[in-house]
Amino acid sequence: VQWYYFYVAGTRAGVPYTFNLTNFVKPKSLYNTGLRPLLYSTCSVQASGIGWRRAGTRVAYYRSGTRYTLTFTVTFDHDNDRCFFAHCYPYTFTDAQMFIAGLQADKARTGTFTRATLCRSLAGNAVEVLCISDPPLPPPS
Image (tube, rainbow, N blue to C red; front, side, top):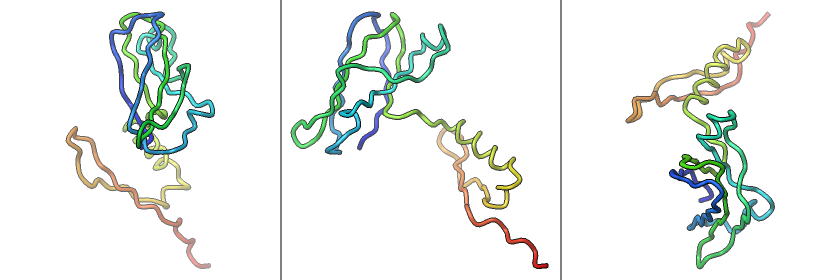
């Protein structure tokens, strides 16, 4: 597994925090070639509108027993911040709904898929099924 998403709260500005994420299974990682974790600071969003960004120093991915560990250090900019960390940019339910609505609004694509609600999640969100196919053939002339 090469994925994570978590938050920390009650941060202190200017203090370096080191995170060790364990139990990864991939033997190689882009973290050893320059990739850094994503950070979302709620204080930074309110102060400057800056959302998700790459952050962290001393990033390393290494073998630890039979598994692998990702370690990195972050120094927060704000006291009492709530900061989220992720391996990749989160793709929200709202993002998916907006993308599908855009497809439905595109006349050239409306014939290439159908959209149906399979069920509802525990949160009440529609769990949808998209059936994708070739566009319809033009009528014979």
